Figure 1 (cartoon, one colour):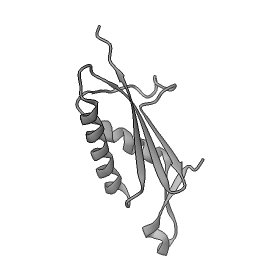
Figure 2: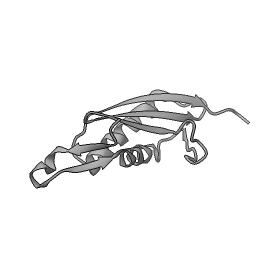
Figure 3: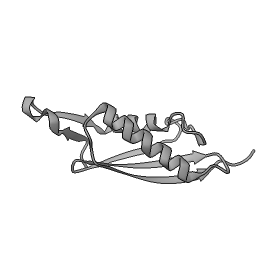
Figure 4: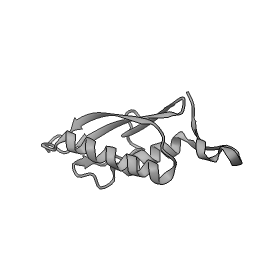
Length: 110
């Protein structure tokens, strides 16, 4: 499995690559300020992290495992995260093909 994506627009001056860790961070940043998503501590969630980034070829696949508040529209959360991710990727690098999948868990009332 690849750990880097090479950016095309820098080929004239050499190669520039972004690591998988950068893409995971961009994914996490895309979750900030999304209403209804309950933030998880990544250090405590080793078995099922909230953001997984997989690089295949020169494409990134995101898997979001989200804990959400009860009675929150999952479609709205998907739209917000997708919009944020697209903006964050374009701010950090050139257009990179990506796909996203979501897995939701409802928070339990205590």
